[in-house]
Length: 248
Image: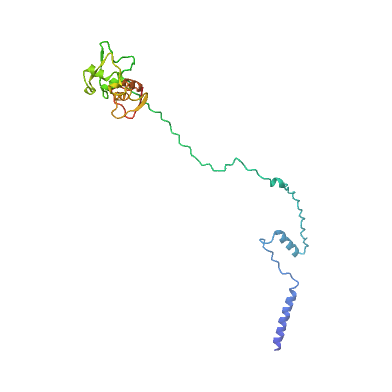
């Protein structure tokens, strides 16, 4: 029992001596990693461990430069709230867009030359009253004996007597009519009406079956030769239906 107590006391004293001897020694210093401490800070810590006095860093005085004054524009209340005159040039209504029509190339009209008459008409030529006292005329399509009387200003009874017939219907297309040298003028008392049937000059539109001779007969005192020369047509040829011609 006494030995156990002596042993424990010895252990306690030994531990106390170890504790007292460790207070006068410095523990080894492990420098910080260079990844977290700058070289200047590491040198300061090392100098402090070596017993050197490390001067405190002096902060440099920050001198602030005065800023340039800001130029604030002056405010003119009268000009700001002045009334703005309306612009008169702005249209009040929208003008619809009208595309320009395409310009077509003008095609010159083709002129069809008109036929010329077979014989130019000479108004000085006398159709009757020759030196032997008579002349002849062959009835054409559209002619008749009464039509000749109106055209040449000859009374129908004299034409009947000259040709030895009693009625105008006895002579037709292709027959030759004898015209007297000294004709008696047309007279209404003979029962055949007026000599001029339709007033002229005038315009006439050609119908189906018309000839220059029948057209001349419809006006009374007009010669088919005059119509042919006036319109540059040919006697005896067919007429275009719908063509408007001038009646002299």
